[in-house]
Image (tube, rainbow, N blue to C red; front, side):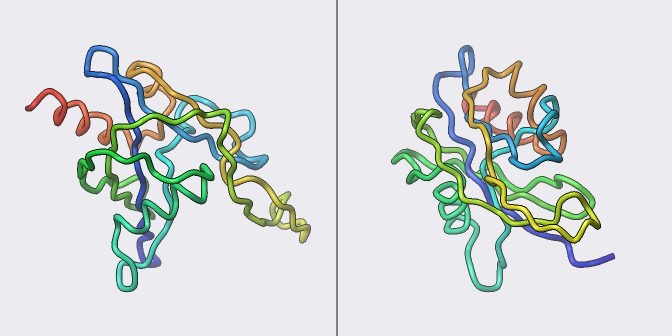
Length: 158
């Protein structure tokens, strides 16, 4: 098995535990086009821990995927979760606001359909939405659900 990939991201949130909302991003491209439940993610991206720290990578990825700087606010280290057999995610939560209609994602190039030899360009993120706790638990990638739990524990002082 190859080396595990490491990503860093920011879970933007607003409200209190009773009415909490988190900002989630839906990946662009044809593979994800019709997927909703278990498809959304913390805005994040890969980084090399030998040349960049997780917080800097999280800021860079937020700006690339949403086209906006990270709102100024307290940073909460949510720790690292295993998203899949091949990827871990180090995440930080930041209290702040963001208008999803202003999101402008960078683009990625990939072969589509697979093995076709054709290269196509897609937005890395095609939608950004505020989700309440219940909706976020259904929509976020299963491997990232512990990040929601970590934020809830922090906000409740547990």
